[in-house]
Length: 393
Image (cartoon, rainbow, N blue to C red; front, side, top):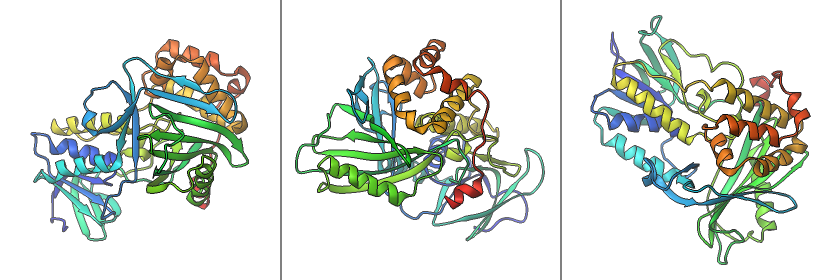
């Protein structure tokens, strides 16, 4: 890639070809408005390393990506009966990372106007002017390219009110697994210890196959080695230590990122998880990314600059902040909070809350189901650790 002496080499450069970057590029690839797009991505190969889930009706615009779905889901603590949920007309649906990557890259490869540069690292962004019309020079370890617009979806370490750290394995057993194949274990065996709150997330993919994740909510990210060891112990407890491991996945999701988005030069939009894609109270982000990608692509097709993720409505932002601060302040009570929500909020209302569609009555039921005093204490914002402390963690 060699920049021209003047002007722009591309209409758009997308930094990062993960879920957000590929979603935007794939939508632009299907557009009748031809835009020159370059995608900069460090990885050279894609692995089946992600799982995305959401609630939708049986048929929808992403149905062809769904590899499995369930009509029930449950919550449970370390002891006592589980709480079982289902909503008429809705299913909990699963998109495999490999299927998403394959379809997105097929659409990109079919477009002569979009180029994916694999194995290339972006090293800097320089705005060659001021204001919305500034051209941006994208510097990489293979040269530079000038773009009218840049969308930066690269992951980065960010401060958050809470972190959701997880390690998962897809397993195959010679014997029938101890999971109901018709029901997802959304938050099973919730409990706390010195490391924070933990639970098991289970997607049964058949009678002998499942994706099992060990998840922790904590004030700082949990190292992957600790999570993997705890996941192995949980599998052993379930009698699944000898099950064949098909693949692994894991990550850390920042929940409730406070303050402004990362600084960016003129002409650069930050998107993806670092740009506000994740729902603070849940960590769900796939549908939010798809909605953003559609809106962003539509704007660019009309000749307008790209747009970032929309800001959260005041009520949702406030409720998420109060909830996460209450959890962080007293992690030992967190399983009780989630079980109270599962028991006290009707399933349809709880799904609407987790899916960015809550109504005022849903918020009222949510507030009524939770203990009053711990949440009233969180009406004022609290501080979060600086980024330098997170890097050390």
